[in-house]
Image 1: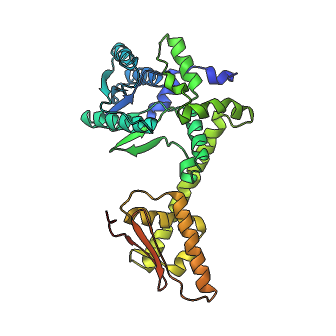
Image 2: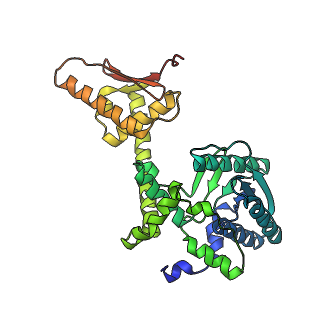
Amino acid sequence: MPKPQQSSIVTAAEARQLFADWLAAPAVVLAVSGGPDSIALMWLAARWRRALKKGPRLIAVTVDHDLRPESAREARGVAQLAKTLGVDHTTKRWTGEKPKTGLPSAARDARYRLLAREAKRHEASHIFTAHTQDDQAETVVMRMSRGSGLAGLGAMARESARDGVILARPFLGIPKSRLIATLAKAGIAFADDPTNRDPRFTRPRLRRLMPALAEEGADARNLARLASRLARANAALEIMTDGAERYLASIDEQSGFDLAAFVALSDEIRLRLLWRAINRTGHEGPAELGKVEALLLAMDQVVRGESAGTGAVRLKLTLAGAVISIGKGRIDVLPAPPRRR
């Protein structure tokens, strides 16, 4: 049973606070699928904009993934509501063959690609998405199940860059139930996407676990709070890593690190420095955290062997298109030669 405050509506005054950070934006794209969260986003953003003397132009964009027969009708429903609210609207379809595996990820990438394209066409600086506190909590659980590091467990940020625009998430602190209550009071209908309950996909399966987790205290509010705290800790560690990177560069300006200075740093900072260097130098995409951790462990074993007087052991490994080697008191990180076909 939801708490009373979770079922209260989002008032006009609260909406002003939720959207206040983007008053100066020239234009904003609203990602509106037709579900309750995104319909509430369009409804509240339209009311907010009407109350302003000057503010961003709003463009609602519906991405029809063409995966269900009802999707075209739902997009038309969004267009009709947008017209009633005085918001410009366009529908973009995800055309072409759909993958047989990894469909949710592919659909998400296609959605953001199409949204970013529309944002650039309308000279919009931001894309608003309707991710809620519930979505944030599910993201934390999903990433925990996959063994994510500190950055991943920080889950979704209020703002993040993607495809040349800024994704903004005004509702990250708002429970979904409050958005539904807001629409109910306004008498506004919304679509129900059955794929949100389809057990073939990871997020719906995890969503079924959320009530049981909430009974043990791991409810959406506490999980979202955990994400916020971890994101704060991660930001502090990134600043410390920036400082360590500058310090090592002042000692050795080559594409690597002085071994003695590197070894003297804490494990987490060394891991982040190594990860950055590999991603900056390699040419096969971002390195996986687990593989970088394994690499750092192998490097530590080599260093311990040298300090124990077992000989000047060298290390040379390749990861994500970068060659990482230890020798002559240095750690070198260089581009790997192209793979032979």
